[in-house]
Structure formats: structure tokens, C-alpha cells
Amino acid sequence: MKIAVIPGDGIGNEIIVQGKKVLETVAHKYNFDFEYEDVLLGGSALDRKGTPLPKETVEICKSSEAVLLGAVGGPKWDKLPSNLRPEAGLLGIRKALGVFANLRPAILFPELISSSNLKAEVLGGGLNIMIVRELIGGAYFGEKNTIDIKGGQKAWDTISYSSFEIDRIARKSFEIARKRNKRLTLVDKANVLESSKLWRKVVEKIAAEYEDVEVNYMYVDNAAMQLIRDPKQFDVILTENMFGDILSDEASMLTGSLGMLPSASVRGDSFGLYEPVHGSAPDIAGQDKANPIGTIMSVAMMLKYSFNMEIPAENIKDAISKVLKGGYRTLDIAVEGAKTVGTEEMGNLIIKNI
Ligand code: NAD
Image 1 (cartoon, rainbow, N blue to C red):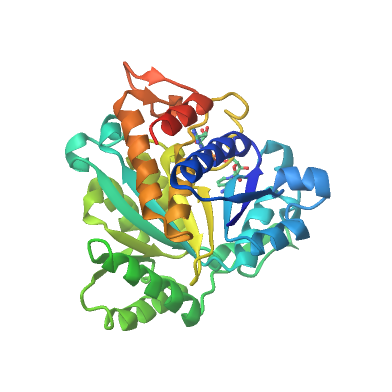
Image 2: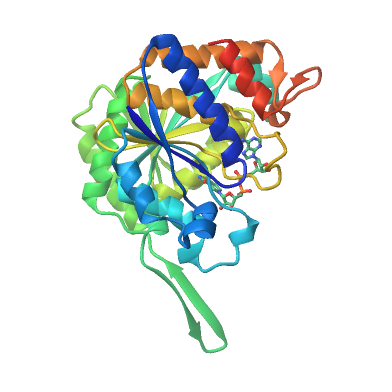
């Protein structure tokens, strides 16, 4: 089984090492073999190959069963035109691989309740929300431009979705909801946006085929508030690209830290692109401070979704739970009295518990 590995930039390099170590440990324990191929993306690709998305990166990813990605970006490349920025590589690889559904579970380990910004009674002993974000359409990919006009400039980005794009991700979300608590919330802005009205129309139609799933519709501004007021009301949240980007970062704070959240970007088959939700965190890069758990949880998602290996995936989650129970914390989730550890040691502790 071939896995393309993209460390990327900043803390991407540190967390990927830990993710790979965990993969190797479960491979050894459960007797299977992974073949890895490291590829460049983002700022590091730009520096070495002159483009944030080299052709061979796309080819190697396409010929792999799964891709494990760290993060890209950093201040060094911030002033470049959009097509050369590291983020162009990230958006480009997602598009090239056709991974239209980004699954972002926001899971609060009971051990981290005190790290969450919300009161324990609002969190009710834990949290498990699945945010399904459309990944290769909407404002990030729509027609955009900046032009000079009299006395200044004008810029626009277009949110455009076809019923086909909505249909395929809505079906995926209903299937996911069916295997969970059978509740789905479509988050949109159908009171003002045409694209949102289409999302509602398509989802309402598909809902008739999934009568066992309870559906409700919520405007994105209300959803942002409800996530803080009463996050336990949510099971599966389905939403378009930009709303999903923002809401999943918000949800991350319910779980203690952005560093805890994994994601899987999938299409209809077993292929997937797995990456933590956070970025390259230039403020802590190279200091052994990054939390590797989001990446290690992404590895668990890879085992489950691409390789159908539920038991090793559960083994990883249990190991993380044990380490947290033991009081070990990276800085971002540290509380008073915690045993603070660095990126490397957190990886080692998880491995020891697998
Ligand atoms: P960020 O997610 O990199 O960091 C936000 C904050 O969270 C920072 O304070 C950072 O230190 C902290 N943080 C993030 N991950 C952490 C971890 N694993 N452990 C501990 N703390 C962690 O977001 P940003 O600062 O807005 O962006 C930095 C760069 O990353 C930018 O260039 C941005 O474009 C890029 N970015 C990349 C991705 C991606 O590769 N998927 C996603 C978001 C942002």
C-alpha cells in the first residue's frame, strides 16, 4: 500500500515525522507493509522546484492509495502573487485529486474538558461533531479578480455551485449521518445567497430518500453562535467550502486546540487525502512545540477510510486517550499541573501506548 507523504512547510515537517512513526508502529503490530514516497508541496516546493504544485507531486499522489499531508504556508511566501503562494499548491492538489468531501470530526476527549474554552456543563462530558465541508468548489475556486477603477481598485470572488456538486456531497453526508446519530444540519445563508438556495433545494430533495435521518437547516451566522451556545445539538454539519473552513476552526476551540483536529478529504472510492485541520503555525515552527495529535488522528482516519482497518485506528485513538489520561500535554492544551511535553515526546508516548 503506497502512501504519498507531504510534510509541507513550518510545523508540517515536525508533525509528519510523528504521524509516520505511528503508522510504522501499527504496521509492525498488525503485520502489514506501507511504502512511503515523500513529495514536495507549498513553499518548500516553490523554493526547490519553482512552483507550489510540481507536476510529479500530482502524479505520485494520484498513483498512491492515500496521501498524508502536514501543512503549507508561511510569512516568507506571503507577498507573492496568488498563483505562487503555498496555498495555491494546497488548493491545487485537492482539486487535482478530486477530493470533494472534507470530513472534519470535532471530538473532545473527556480528558481535555478543562482545556476547552466552554464550561464543562455545556460540553456534557465530551463532544463528537462531524463537519462535512465541500472542498473543491465555492468562493475559493470561483471566478475572481482585482481591477483598477477610478480612484481605487475593485475585487471580487464568486461562489458558484452546481446541483451535481451539492448532490454528491449531500449523499455522502446522509450516509455518514446514518452511521452516527442520524441528525444532519445543513448550514447555509439561504436568506441572501442564491448558491445557498440551491444547496437547500438539493438537500431537501435528497432528504426524502433518507427518512431515517432528521434534517434541519440553519443560517451560518446562527450556526456560529449555536456551536458555542449548545454544541451538543449537532451531529453532522454539512456546509459549503468557506463556511466549513470557518466553522471547523471555531469547533476546534471546543475541543481544546486547533492542534487536536484531524481531517479526511475523500471522493467516492477508497482514496483519501489526510491532514490536520491547522496550518503551518510559523510562530512555533522548529521549536518542538507543535501538537502532533491532529496529524496522528488523521493517520487513524486514513487507516479507517482508505484501508478499512478499524481496529488499528481504534488502537491509535485509545493510545492518545491513555496519554492524555496520564496527564501529558503539549503546550497548546496544557493546564495547571500537566506534564508538558514537546512534539517528539508526545509522539513517543502515543507509540508506547499502541
Ligand atoms: P495556523 O493554523 O497555522 O495557526 C493558528 C494558531 O494555532 C497559531 O497560534 C499556531 O501556533 C496554533 N497552532 C496551529 N497548529 C498547532 C499545533 N499543531 N500545535 C499547537 N499549536 C498550533 O493558522 P495561521 O497562523 O492563520 O496560518 C499560518 C500559515 O498556515 C499561513 O501561511 C496559512 O495560509 C497556512 N495555513 C495552511 C493550512 C493547511 O496547510 N492546511 C491551513 C490553514 C492555514
